[in-house]
Image (cartoon, rainbow, N blue to C red; front, side, top):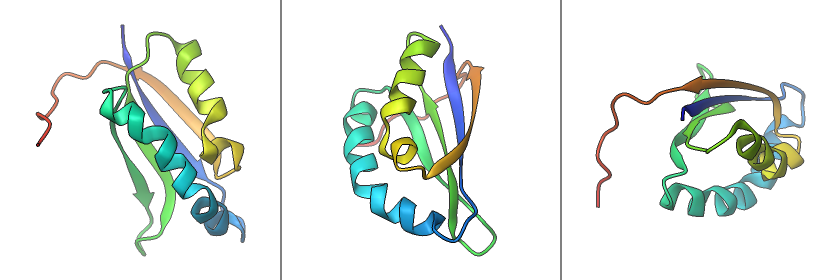
Length: 101
């Protein structure tokens, strides 16, 4: 079964940065256990040339696309309208660095 690459773009309106900051704690509380379980293999913010967060990218491991979609629908960044566009690509991870202690 494939993993998925999720590229999530923040809105570019005046309130986008405030929405991200307001949902950030809840988002990390949501994804933390998923990362510990290996369901989120890699994740982080996409930055513009000025170092400001403008989106997110992650590689996730879900059994089905429906499970991925259910997670996305409930994530605080989606619920809080931080992520305005989601691009999802099935992929197969070929190389993965070992987890550091």
